[in-house]
Image 1 (cartoon, rainbow, N blue to C red):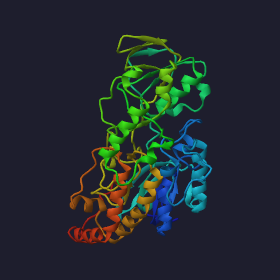
Image 2 (cartoon, helix red, strand yellow; image 1 turned 90 degrees about the vertical axis):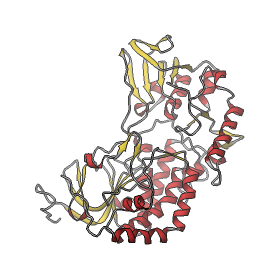
Image 3 (cartoon, rainbow, N blue to C red; image 1 turned 180 degrees about the vertical axis):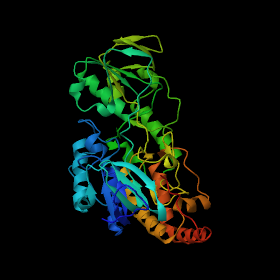
Length: 444
């Protein structure tokens, strides 16, 4: 323990200035930890929960299964067990992530029950981290991998409802639905999973969507649809193939009493679900448009129809948020974090926003491809004084406009960047020479 009074006037600060800190020990955080470990980059890792696994540990319902496939979800360098199904369960995923942490000896660097309350830049381009229990530490950089499936978004309702209103984040077990009249709001993957569960065990299930979604089947001809997408396929080809699969499996939206979606496939995060159309055809799920208002036990929809319910489940998504950051570092606009190359700022070095984007499946394989590259970025950042984000900005890269991504395009870009990394590093040193006096601006 060393006293660094220039950074804090209230207590001693642990000097870990030779390390990076990884916030979060979920899928992304563990993947990044393994990449740093493999590159011999010193780091600490913390998580607010009492165990690793992130959303797969504390956030999903008991009956959840992945929507992409085992093949593309697994870390490329650590395959899932051969006896896992094509669509592993939540328990499979928890077991897998624990095995990953053990195999790569990651646990010794992880501190659980450590929640960050404040993160700020201080002098000498260091980062001061304050934890909720009062401890403070200094780091050379911070990787923010706190996930985006925890800050619940609820709709704004008109009127009052006498029953219970929960978010899909609060749904854990089918017994919460058993025998109840259930209204599920939303057309995303969690909403549709809950609707299918309510169709099985509930007294009634209504699925309310402001607009229709494209229901993509999880398999086609016995193969997970995600596995049919190959690295060489441009997005337009993937889209055309997906339209064909939808038409051959489900038919037309009007066949299910649904309106045609007002967006192209992949313009929004895809809904991979084979059960909702099935249960609509069996009368176990009743599709409805958006809600007009709540009225006691009843809900009125914008088409004028009314239904009585015991429970409303809101599958209305999450906010991307970093509550421990000062306003100057809040770069979130909607679901997009305005940072270069998916992680870097142009005005602060040593802070990295990781895992906020939503690719169409393949999180493990993407992290496997990205992690080793990111480790090289960190090593390059040690060689230059300016933020890497400024380098990306000066070579012409733009800030992102969407949080959605095509994983195949990402794989192609990562491969190209790795091939050209030496040229990028040379350019980074040239840009660095233009700003010899750069320093992070300390924040209170």
